[in-house]
Image 1 (tube, rainbow, N blue to C red):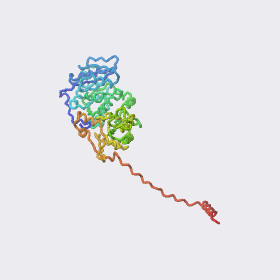
Image 2: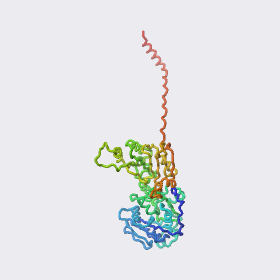
Image 3: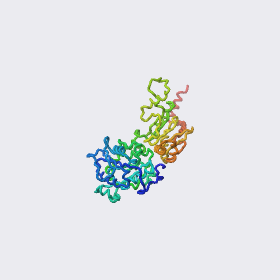
Image 4: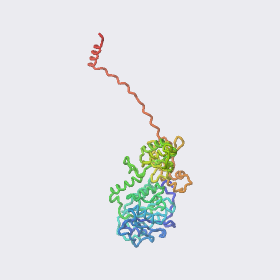
Length: 485
């Protein structure tokens, strides 16, 4: 699949296939006033009950949650023992889950009968897909779990014509079902999506330090892992109650901004404060300093940190682990240059010293790799990122005059290549060429030649104006006085 175009996938037709993958529906709940309706809807799902379990995560409810009478056959409660919040609750539930697919669902959602089936079918045709369900917001009408369980459609229970659609649905429609979306992770905001359990763990689960916008931050890391986001219009659900943005938009926006600003570098609109450093940088600059002089490295690092694009981290790759701390000749050390470099940069948090670069720089969205003896121009990174973002190319290769190259690599493209060839054996660039594209360009735009000096013009001498009448008279008298008798 190229970028996020999943057109190549053909999922099974609803109701006309035999599922084989197990699904764990993880439902975090604090008190859970609407949990009985959520579980009643899950009890009527079309997905085979022997392949589905529901894990209700009790996030500090008082009194503790008790399961209602109408619920799926395989339903159990696990309780959060350390920490609190949605992220912690979801992570706790996934840790306890047995399913091959993890379905995230909120405790105030009522899903249509086909919801789990619609999302799970995509995972039977691809192992690196995140499927996303649809949701609308309604005020809760007087309903009983029995009514929900008996209903064959959501329209029997709710006035869907007056429901408030999620803002993500407009984005999905405008981008051809996310096939043409530049940042499809934006719409994966919960509270209903499904993904392979292995993928959930590979990206580290939800971040318990993010108290608002945790689903968006998690989805961003999924994007950096190389997944494809697939919305399914047949996976309908209603959310009981209006979203927080409708209740207190100003505070809802303010509280989420710092969480996302620090963790999602692609949100350039949130990083406008000058002179700031952020938790996750925009670009990692990787320089191999093995067998390189300290003077050359110093010049390269200075150029890297002094560019127009300041949102960077510099990774110096070298045999740092060879530097033992035993007795040695300080001046005659065989690793003299390396030791000087380590002491020079070990205490700068913008610079990392590692023996081998990671396969991808995730969650940083871009990585620059180039010769250490070709310092970056002030405009190099800014222009490379700008060029790569125009068509979302996977790798931008700049062919240098001496035959070497400098590369700007897109993290999601590198990660996709690893998903498609997890054990190596295939050149990642061959895969990236298909999934995201690789473009070669010359160095002129990225290392522009110095502007020629402006010509210096010497101004013509200003003529002395003729003396005024009084001055002429004074000059005559002076000359007369100075004549010899």
